[in-house]
Image (cartoon, rainbow, N blue to C red; front, side, top):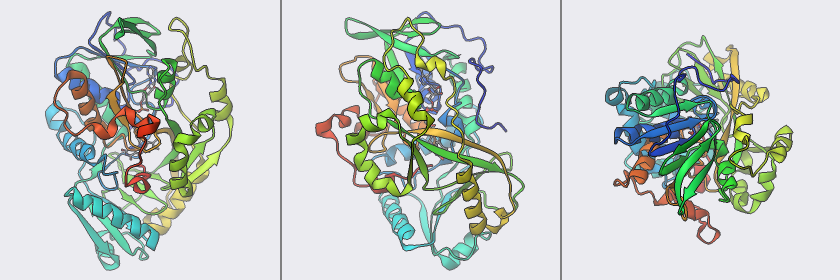
Length: 454
Ligand SMILES: Cc1cc2nc3c(=O)[nH]c(=O)nc-3n(C[C@H](O)[C@H](O)[C@H](O)COP(=O)(O)OP(=O)(O)OC[C@H]3O[C@@H](n4cnc5c(N)ncnc54)[C@H](O)[C@@H]3O)c2cc1C
């Protein structure tokens, strides 16, 4: 099974023949799990869709994530979408004939101290309010439920309808299903900007030429702020670096993803494990960190324990990145086909050491591959899935704040419904863009818990 993609070549060899349509109904900017899921549901409705991806399908966050598909621990505002999304994950194979590696294994969180227990109890209360099939376990029950675990865990929360899927398979398989329904998947094709006629969206301008269309969905992951900024629209979004690694040849571990205070692991379909440090994220200081300080200060104060602020090369890279360009000029999206940050190796080594203490079967395991990804976060760690006011035909589906793999299919469905005018599968109001207009900015009751990624 593949690893996250690091190739620098522009076009994705899996989609070599995509000729750009001169005209379509909807252009989707970005071929991550959000973009391809929206494409699938729009194509299923019979709309003409073109996904434009500057690099390869799912080469950024959507292939680098841990592969957890969960409802447990989600912000109450996001919970209905998480539940809806899990229902879609369950059907993907049967309904669309694709293998995304989805397994409904359940997920368990293990606690060792009062702080972790308090957090798990908070999640349990939210889960109960949403009728999640969950159970709590004390120390003795943990030993029976997770036989490989060390003996110092005091409490656990298990949700049986959570699970896992395979990041290297999922978005490409969804893109294939969309293509079979007529969607054009154009890779190595950066969108530079949009054109309007009488105030309405009338085209996108790509590096390979224009495409006439009546709607554009910006699903550009960590690039959405830059894209929107070039249109003069402020989307408050920062990036956080998160790491993961692969280990092989570990026997006797549970099938379900398990997380503790400082580790996380998920069995992969190929038999290895994706492991990661939990509750540690690196926040690279960049010019936007200062521009967006008022927006992100509350989030920073909430999550400072798990954030490591770093100033490094990324500051200067972003400082040198043009923030405005004309559609007939190469855009910054063409300079970086795949955002492939270096993995902070010490973090992964520490995660493996923590995992070895928690599950001794990992004690002698060796890291065979390390990678990292830049997660796009909003100030309240809830995505925007909405039409953009004042821009008829322009939509934004971005800012998934470390939760977008699990809720991706649901978010794609919701976005498709907003574009086509269908009844939305969940109340879309928590995802409205206007909440970032300063007068309306309000943090949800569960923000301290929502900081959880993966
Ligand atoms: C290490 C790590 C672990 C994670 N673990 C989990 C997890 O276990 N569970 C979970 O639910 N979530 C997890 N996440 C978060 C999840 O991966 C993301 O929220 C999700 O993949 C976001 O999908 P996306 O489509 O919005 O963005 P992306 O996957 O980043 O895709 C955006 C795409 O847009 C393209 N693009 C941008 N601008 C342009 C342009 N102008 N023209 C053309 N193309 C453009 C980019 O090239 C990119 O391919 C994790 C993330 C990381 C990094």
